Length: 456
Ligand code: NAP
Image: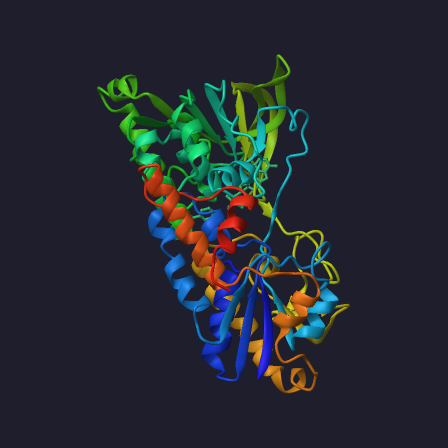
């Protein structure tokens, strides 16, 4: 049997495991995760109100319950955990599916002022990530919020800021985050792109959802949209971008229709979509962020933008920087610092332009933080195909019969599938005690205590 370790139990890890066991009956896969819970960004990234996308967990669950796949949570690989070199001794092959775990920086003055957070931090908090900031003060004392960036994460955090308590209480959002968002007085949310509407990265379905939020008005400025050369006639744009522009044109037309504005006056919250504004500084007010200063931009010939020397300030006591994720280097693996990915050839890790069988990558650490969950399927399949092609060579290596004993000998006590099921029961019980459905446990101690109640 070929023993494979997949590091990371998010979509790319699960789809890699699935591709391997489906393609070859002689493969056993351990899916390792540093967290006690599986599913990666499906559990800790997909917004709580996106229940349909979250239900993808059911597909991933069936992979992790496959008879030749085993989930081992609470197993960090690298510094402070199992050294990558040791993992290589325990398995014929290791596939890294660790995603892009940090956020990009703006590199502008004031970025680190209190009240300025990366969207990643905010998402981790409302998703109950056990490493999230132990601080429920994101929205405290804030009336106006600026979200920098116009990707799908920006749309997620904008929408979450605009959701009311009634809509959130039916989700699995942790109780503390629910309480904080229910008490939020953030009424003005600005989502700001440095380029034009035809270059925005959000997908149309996600964009459209903003206009369906209860008690919330969405606004665009037709004159600002018209700064985009593709705005007047978007027909030549790629489909996804054309649809985005069409939605925005529709909103602009509604805004200028006779009688428009009466709904706006009755809505409690507003979301303003702004474009061609590049952040240049976060301005302080009484020791915390008070506004963001932007420079007006115009399109250049290369699809980018240049500054015009004209500036605008938008008031904000909360700033969420949503400018993309970034991969981190992994112990013992080569790393392309520019792209934030591990160099590879069809999923095989490339060292100094040569592949050495036994190490593979899939998902965001392979291709960068792009695409939707489904993008990981073909990506994982490519890596699994490469690995299985290498199997004759990989099988020449001697590995222990069951790596679990070796992991335990190294001081790691993994959370097994029954441990995870105990966490799920504890989350259902917590929800019931609060009069809600499932409510996520938000800290390491509670997660591990719940896992320990499982029968060995
Ligand atoms: P993203 O799609 O790469 O968007 C990043 C945004 O940040 C872009 O608007 C980018 O503008 C802007 N940006 C980057 N650097 C900037 C700077 N220095 N100043 C101002 N703006 C800057 O990243 P993401 O939103 O984090 O999403 C990551 C991936 O997850 C995407 O593939 C996304 O579709 C996916 N995702 C999907 C869903 C869903 O399907 N519901 C939900 C969440 C995330 P430029 O274009 O000008 O660089």
